[in-house]
Each structure stands twice: as C-alpha cells, then as structure tokens.
View 1 (cartoon, helix red, strand yellow):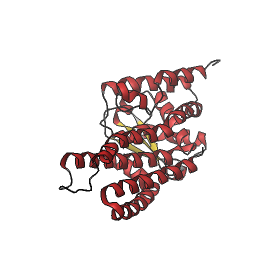
View 2 (spheres, helix red, strand yellow):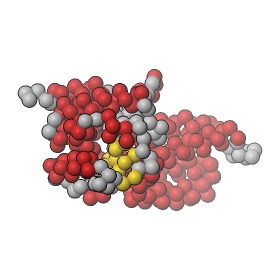
View 3 (cartoon, one colour):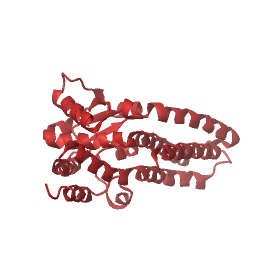
Length: 280
C-alpha cells in the first residue's frame, strides 16, 4: 500500500472517528460539528503537521554557524542521497534521539536532540542522519506526521471521554456510559494501531537505506545500541502519539504495551544491519 493511499485512509479514519464521537456526545448536532472539525483537522494535518510536532517539542532551527558539523553531515548525505537539503532543528532535551518530518522532500526537517549531539560520534551521527534522510526519500515523513496528529486527536478525545465518565454531563439522560467507556479504552489502542501501521516495516527499510547513504552499517548499528540504552536511562517526556517518529523509542515500554511497540526490537535492527555488512 503506497503512502498516498495510507494518507487517504488515515484522514478518512479520522473523519469517521470524529463523526462517531460527535454523535455519541451531541447527536445530530454533534455529528455536524464533528464533521466540520474533521475537515479543519484534515487540512491542518496535511499542511501543518510538521509545525505541530516541532512546536510540541519546542524545536528550534539550527544555523550552520551554531553547529557546522551537523550541517556538514546533513548537507553531504543529502547530496549523496539526491535529496534537497532539509532544514535542521534542535530539540532542547538531554534524551538522545532524532526524527524527520515534513510533507515532502522539498519541505523536510531533520530534528536532533541535544542528547544525541553529546552521545554519538560523527560517524554514528551520520548513520542516524542517513536513516532520517531515508524516511524523507521514501516519503514516509508525511504519513508519519499525519499519524502523529491523528493519534494525538484520538487520545485527546479519549481523555474527554474519561472526564465525561467521571463527572457526567449534568444528569443528561442521553448519556451512554458503555459508549463512553468503549471510547476511553479503545481510542488509545486505536491510536497505537495507527502508529504500528506506519512504523515497523519502514524502520527496517530506513535502516538499510540510511546505512547505504552513510556508507557504514556498523556505525548506524552502534548508534542504535547507544541510543536505546541511553533512552532507558534518560527517557524523554514524549507524547505517545509521536513516539513512532523517533529513530528509537523515546521511553521504555513494559508488559502489555510492548505488544504495541512502534519500533522493531533494536536487536533485530542491529542484526539486519550487521548482516548487510558481511564482506566488508
């Protein structure tokens, strides 16, 4: 399934979910309001999802004078990959991680945390940047950003349902506690399923392509191991709706949530990368 079709299905799913939630909370009037809200969110998701995600993490543009090494790595690898030079952003966070966003290669952004700049060697950083450029080249970044926006909207509605269950709606006889309970429980799961639909297979592909762009699978494998270990020690206060965008999970998952992990196990990613390095 190509990314255009995935984007269409995700936006259609958002519209359907909002209309359903609107009907539960407000009947016909709620449905009409939800449909209008869905149209606004669909437009915003397509055109402004990258800005929403960057603002969420207080990311700031990085000039070449501020970080010439990072700019040099991004520029050289972009040229090697045949891509336009993306904008470079810094996330003021000590947890080491990175992601790419934007609606197409001409409007792409690569964002790195302060933590990743302090942790990785230049060669390992190049592997990470190659991975993010692979997402840009594969045009994963639009679907990833839209999925983050949609998942965030679903989780917001689930929280609203939880509060409605706790406080009620002033004794309204039309309340449906079963429907509210279903939304409160199922909406976060639906959000994670959306993320899973766009994450696991594309991470393997981005690893392979990114290693090829950077020219050293071992450097990316080393970076993945370092990042995963460091993220456990210094987890990021990340929004779960955006966790699939990062190169490694920004926080440690446990128990049942591991079943809904948005990233393949790092051991398997490293194994595939080192397997592609045979004969070097």
